[in-house]
Image 1 (cartoon, chains in turn cyan, purple):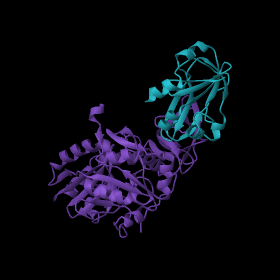
Image 2 (image 1 turned 120 degrees about the horizontal axis):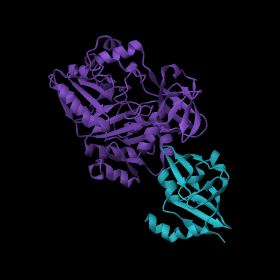
Image 3 (image 1 turned 90 degrees about the horizontal axis):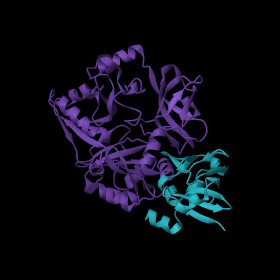
Image 4 (image 1 turned 135 degrees about the horizontal axis):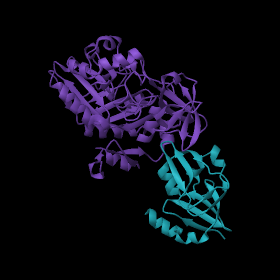
Length: 122
Length: 366
């Protein structure tokens, strides 16, 4: 059974068996506009909460996407290399960014659920 | 600039109703994108007609018996040689020949000229021109106008359907078709198109007519930037600054030969000495390898890792389908085909020096 969490920086995490799939929310992709490039992370990279994991580039600007929790990258969504617009068209589905093995699952408790996130973006 | 100082467009309500996303630019709250998004807006402009609210830019009327002489002092220009209705791209230069602003000057009458200035520099331009005007029998009058651009291959037809005939107007010419209107065939996209300064009530009426035409869509500032970058056109504040002269910027085509040789414009001596020894850096097009954009401010190095210059403007070209950029490089490295590397967050992205524009200009010259 997967649980979905949200961050104040407009990321979502779907956690299953100690591994989180991470992406940006629909609200975030709308703010960024059409994406043209996603700089994907290396597999095996260890991240602390708040580290820059991915850089997403729109026509106009580059934006960092931060690790929402501590962990190690296990997979990057390589289909974004040829089609970064998947993040725009399916932010919470095929437009996921990376998967990470969680090193401290207790950090999830500080994240928001969907109802809290919806209240956060107003 | 604090939020309270932010200036608002007179037609902000129309942009809000059209679903615009706003952002700050040059002290103004500007529509950055509309619901279709920058990619579609950009392509729509190249295929049909894009409508831009550029009322942040400033129109000045320069008039009086000394108007041409004033402009010839402020700009490397022979204003008196312009035919009536002829427009000229030019600059305000400082004593070091640095570009204070880039402008379009149009001759409206024997002693009347229209000057179109950039938003971010308008106040300084006005101060500069007024200070100079004291030495000439000339006045500088800022005009209170809405300023619209309609750009793209269908621009003339859409204006025609809205009741405005443009048939006799050629690229880089401007006229006053109605009281308090100024319309020129010009723009910032590389496409055929028009820029129209007009009173707010007239603007609302014209916009309502134009938007009834499905070929016409609002286009935001984000696509305005990607369109001008593909067209190799400079943005003052990035590609041009008071530290950059017209020779380094590759804009000497804008300065007539006689003016270069014997003009008495501010910065003439400095520019002549730059031309004599040759500029040390030159503006070039840069085509990054792959899909990753290189952005303004990125450092450029040569194959051996030596400093080569910097990126001045960079982004993604929706029409070219690849990243596009412009920058300044050491003159020895300015030849098209030269491979350089841009430092993007520690990664060296290969970029090739390339000729500009990235997309061919489609101006209506005759």
